[in-house]
Image (cartoon, rainbow, N blue to C red):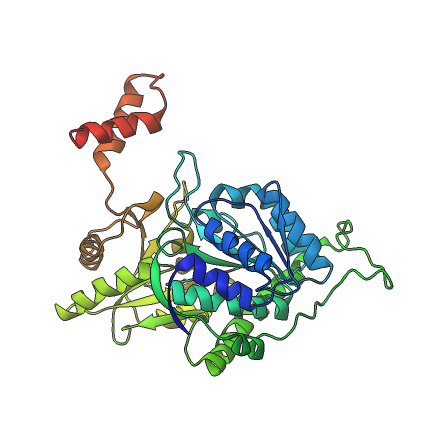
Length: 415
């Protein structure tokens, strides 16, 4: 059914259609609207046989869904930014125990400095935690990926993060096709956990593992992630068969055929990137776009195939890794090792800064003309950085750099 909804409301309805048994939540913007809506659905009886648990923290939320999932319940939670970091210890426990929990991450910048706006630094900080990570390009895909995520998680007995850009998607009103309950029931069978706490057949879950088997446990986890490279596209194909639309999978390509320059990115910025590429194609510039859906597992072979024949690859990275060349950029460079393709990592959209068509087109043209370094900060106000570096050369005690740069930016703007 077509509905005009806020992204958070669409995701809440999708999760409700998956018939969760336990929802644990602690509010943090920009995911709060999702769990607020789910709380109303549970209270009204719209979701049958479901317990909504209010907990004292994000760590408590993840701990509660771990217990619920271990007991055989289809379990869900949501978080963002500092809340995700507060969960970190329990996040590793969930994946190490092989529990098929689904969690929405409404992507938001990590402090300090404090920032509530969107980038992808929160979920990417957990890239080695043992959770599958799927990224939504728009709100329709966010709806679809949540429905697929439960099936993927339960097939592999691994937890899944569905990542959607905070505010840009969560608070945006868009037309979405919300499935009927009968369709979701046809696609997603009742939960049958691989492991369960049963008083009649007691086992230990979470027991200590010493050096004699720890490597093997981790290897098993890696094996399941390799299996996910087959399961994710298979589930996407099953989704298309039931719902009649393509969504999810490992990646998708847009106007890539015959191009020597290709852009690869994740999340909501892809809409603007495609618009910029359309305009450049009209002007005669051959450039294509690869939309990455699965960051974990990272589909190295699929990425290499999607970028085959490209002489230059521009990676749009929505987080920064001090001392390195960007999270996504490093993965893409690894996938293209030995091909001779020139990989340029463009850091863009940090802390909610707008990613505009104009800036993208200027950046793409500069890359094509060989004018960009291997690591480039798009729309960087270099004068602010240079001024602070010069200040630090002159004096050991310069005060908090964050506040100084904010003041400089205000003076520069004439405020």
